[in-house]
Image (cartoon, rainbow, N blue to C red; front, side, top):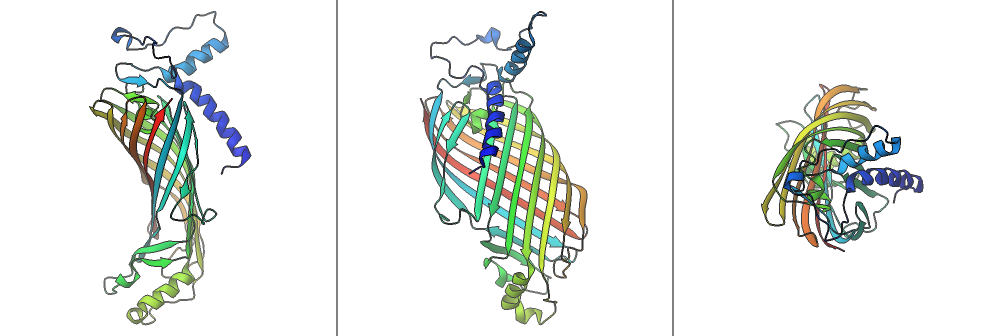
Length: 373
């Protein structure tokens, strides 16, 4: 649950953007839409003697102008939806000596109802796999898809119920005994915001694929440009890791490594600019398959502490550029009254330097069904 102050400013932002995004949503069923001759939907000139409010209104309305030969607006104001959300995370770390470890928490499976009014969705989901870990496992996400601009806000904290998915020390040491071992010495959290601009917004509709507030009627594609800011926190209890290593690989190592280690903490900020391409494919009546990929050039700044040998984070500072990525995929059936579908959204963040490398990947797979009224 967001703090009251956070909910207030988020509501103000959503209200402002929703005015720009919703345009003629909620039109009566007998409303006459523009003909093909009107499909270009050029901006209407504002008279010179117009007030500043008129000019502001026309600027805001520009966000909602579409080509009705490609996009059909929703005819209803309200919606009810049931959604299942499945999350995935993976954290991979590698030091200068080639030692690496990959950790993932157990997946979460959430189910819950949502009620929406035009662009506003309110709902609550319950993690049926971890119903009593609400404080340890926190996941908040908000996405706003308008014709021209998209916004993603997210915060994730996964607690400490991880499994070691892979572990590597050297070619001479067999580390298979470390695979899928429970490990409670790692914590991770990420929070951030993505903002992106959709160039072909009069013919291409992101909301048709991910918000069900419009319907794509003809194939369309668009280039994307975006900016993002994320903050990452990783904490590895190396004493606990040493204990697991000694229990599982003690005979193979034969005391080859120092075990007097402490806690390693990594905190880094990622500011990036992205470019990508998206495509909506209308392969049958009322059906839509959507895909978009964006690559981001990210500037990262971070610090690590507690030198240790097995994963040598020797007082480094991240000040470099790396490639990040985001992918969105959707499959939707929507006849404007009823809808059902699925969506997959994946983020990956990379940092690579001579003494340390890390990759963080997280995403969510959603299945939903609902109706408008």
